[in-house]
Length: 234
Image (cartoon, rainbow, N blue to C red):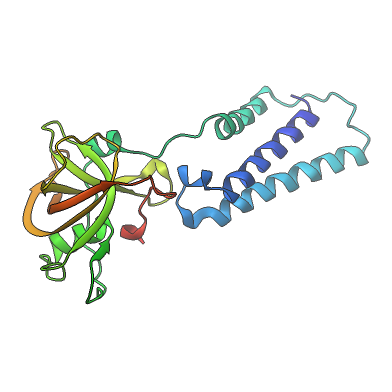
């Protein structure tokens, strides 16, 4: 790889990062709070490419085929991965093979007094397990997540949470009981309407606590633009 090819790859990688950061593509890799860093990295790479090209032109070396180590071609791998492969968000397979990451929250913010409650999977699970459902009793609840099934066929509503990036994603799960649809496909996104029940179970993977929700209704919904849930680890 000569210096000109190296510069072109730096520019292409930087432009790809800027594209990912200005669209929802970056959400497949990192949590939404890291968007400024993705954009900054792209800008730095483009600036580095421009500075390298300017330096070579100033010294009159653009026509000189000065070869850098062949390892430089490894720069093509992240470029090709970002351009050609947009991996789907982690779903039911990862959730079924990873134990619930539910941990005790620092506290429970007050909830609205009237109307149905729209809660995240982790919010419901945390209140159900660590607050014995005190703020949930007698309330109509709406929760959205994707479906996963364990080996016994037990259905769960799940959201994956990120600490930093997709590589460290972990699930929080709610078991479903009551008026559950007779046929559920893994990775289907559902909006579940239901009510709190004190029933609990243990995750078959790590024995972590999993609360139930008594389903009174459900409907398929589109995959959210950000499929990961960051509320439980912020």
